[in-house]
Image 1 (cartoon, one colour):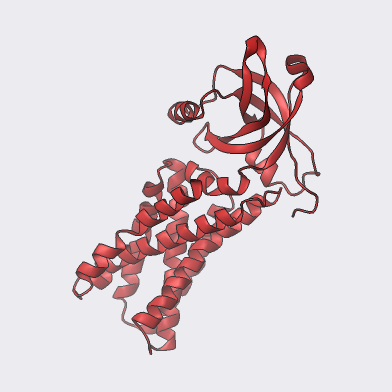
Image 2 (spheres, helix red, strand yellow):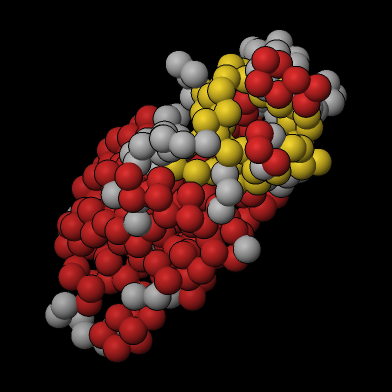
Length: 318
């Protein structure tokens, strides 16, 4: 259901475009400068998130220590592709036969404003992990520059303006994506790529005895801080713990390191080298997620001690 949820977020983000476009496009006094920018930016933001959702689905089953690199590349190019797709369709539908300089200016403008909107969106998601807060916030941030471009009348001035804004926006987006995932929404886009990834988990032998090494898979990502996340693993075979407790779902947090980055973003890590983690038993996933989102701190009960987690992947996977 994760990919469908991501597609739903993209769709809702783009919705403001349609009533604004169909109700006000015939009003030349207000539409080009004041209404067209937020409408078009909302549609392009929705397209960018849709492309990212499709890319996230494509990553499924391709987990490796270089997955985060691929994810960040997709996060960077999704708004660029969305802007170019919108620009090409717009050129054929509305501006056929326009001067090449004007077409170039228009396409560069779409790239500039969409990449800026996504960069702002990523920053806002780190502050408040609400999908529409970030996406619509990015739209509102990019719209004034879009309106300024539409108000210019000298073609070469417009072209120079869009070139400058494009370079700045691409640089800002590159910096923003290089640090992801750092929010719940971006981790939601990452999740399809790492879900069901096989892992080997080693418990403290003094605590678990014969069950000290087990196999499992990545099931979900659980937040435990504004920019931190733990990984929920599901064991392939439930094991008996203390007092007859059955252990099947485990939440793990990297010790002095980011677990997601170490497992999926450290290509230089030797094959099979485990990550040192702290682990907790998760009895009810929905309840645990709600509690972690509310408190933003690690659990105070059901601590399983320290252990190790390593990916179980083929050396041929790159």
